[in-house]
Image (tube, rainbow, N blue to C red):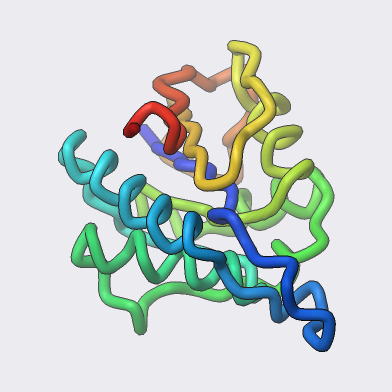
Length: 164
């Protein structure tokens, strides 16, 4: 059994005209929502074997804040270049290439692709993922390369507004 958590990065700032899209940081709400979602995962007693993130500052910051709450070592966060500006096929390749030793993986990415990818894999319709939202899917397989909708089970969709 494999468990995949798909997370859209937390809310980012648009107030930096001199920064590229890739360099945009989290705003205040993002810095609050990301650890709140980490707490939501912790309340579910979730233990991650692997955390992978887009290299964009807002995604990597989200991953680091969640990692801190879950006591996941920051140095073990894997930055995967192709998650940034990925399409659903790119994300499928990332998932299919995950190490089979990892059974529980959190992938932090960007919308619209993260929502489209969740819907590609989920047997249930996923609404557009808000910033910092998490979808959990479980797969009846021992190999990440075999992950697809045919062996998928929708487990939950959680977002920061649920925490207010």
